[in-house]
Image 1 (cartoon, one colour):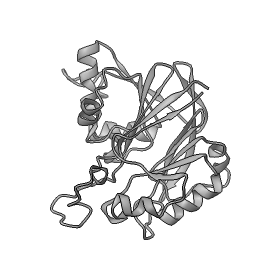
Image 2 (cartoon, helix red, strand yellow):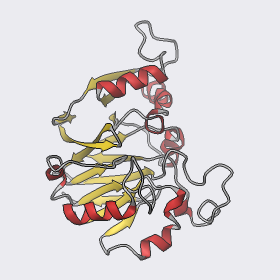
Image 3 (spheres, helix red, strand yellow):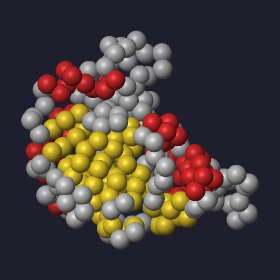
Image 4 (cartoon, rainbow, N blue to C red):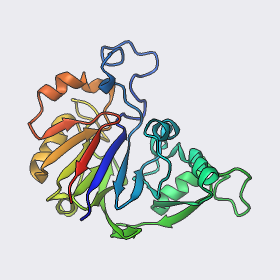
Length: 258
């Protein structure tokens, strides 16, 4: 597998951190690692940049990371904090004069159509993003020769896809992963998994549940994402984690050798 660079575009939950009008210690923190945009990552592999999820902070994330081109956007699921930035993809249409490829389940495409009805109309609205939709299922697919393996997890009762690309595995918005899907993540150099807070939650892993999963899957390194302000201060939590487990933060880059 070719080497790749993972960039954490955002590591926060649907509210982001700081939360509007919140005066808690995390939301008032001066540590930039406690400021979290909505969750998304960029995978740079074989000269291609793949974005996983395109939330409401997408425009700023692209500007912050000085991204000048993307090869495709891959969606985990259709919740608004993961799809709301899709209108801003049109900037790549304008500047590069190209259509952007979208890879998603039919359910996610239906959610995009509901939220952005002007995108998928037969006669496209002037100025709408120019997108090419590709329907994916729970089986391997490839983009520009890079193979991607979906991993089905549950976000409470909603089916959500995690993805494995080479030795990188990304799982967000999960509260359950079946025994039949877990083997897909085994042997990862880098595993990313969500943990919303310390206490149990109906649709996300807690910190202890995430650590239990990491211990079971045994990656070389693991990063925790989709964090709310309830998780606590970055430095306090990091001090208590195992040596190979890290809290992800916005702008963090992780290199995986080939």
